[in-house]
Length: 219
Image (spheres, rainbow, N blue to C red):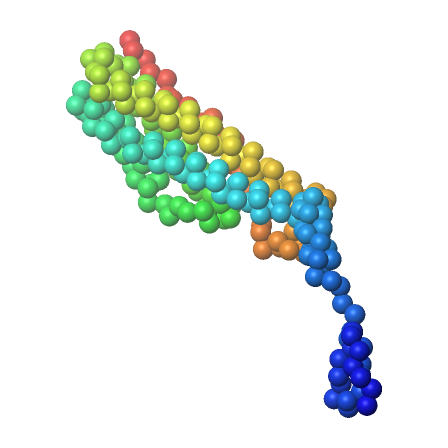
């Protein structure tokens, strides 16, 4: 029986056999690291990264719209104390807010174009109702000078600005995400690894009629 020399192992038939060659561990680690860095440089992580940015931007849109909805009850109550006869306008604001709040809104809404369109339409109706309310307020100097109303008006204006910024950021995030999916090399990564991530719809331009306040004759 031959002695077992270094680099060999004993087989079942007691004959020495050579171990199958394999990469040293440090070379394996080096190869894996090289592949990960190369793949990252090719944009393999861009799609999930941009997807998370879309979700974060959408969360900000939701937050700002909710902030506006939270201001409305106090606004309506304050206006009603001075202009109860403007009941039709106040009811329009209240009903528009109720429609918005009745919608089931979560991050999955942005994956459903029909629901996103419904959400946008409801918010546009609320914007229009609020615009008409602000026009009505012009008839009541005492209301316009009320400190509570002035505070609410300032908060509402600030919220509308934040809504515009949040919408702009969301549109930008969606455009970046969709562009990555439709262009090389993102298109390849999408077909191979991320086919379950859909192309997303973005906000459409708001109808001018939705937010256009009616003309008011003060004569």
